[in-house]
Length: 109
Image (cartoon, rainbow, N blue to C red; front, side):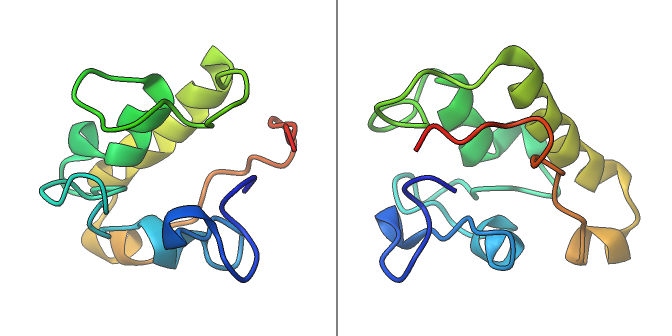
């Protein structure tokens, strides 16, 4: 969760495991109001993914900000999870299981 945890997370975006889905799934981005952070129906337009990949058209800097970029396999895990939401049945897209990052990701903070 890095900067995005605790009582006052950066950009009001709490990525702690118990708040993650509510914070990102089909939630409008504060930086680009026409995009959702994680768009279950249009995963290629998920702003969270765009930010971690540093895609063209993002506002501000790549995430995680001020630390080395995520490894390719870490980005792939997140990408696969986001794209799996579209392939899932509609009920699963409402209540998906977030990617298990505990064994793959190391906290930079």
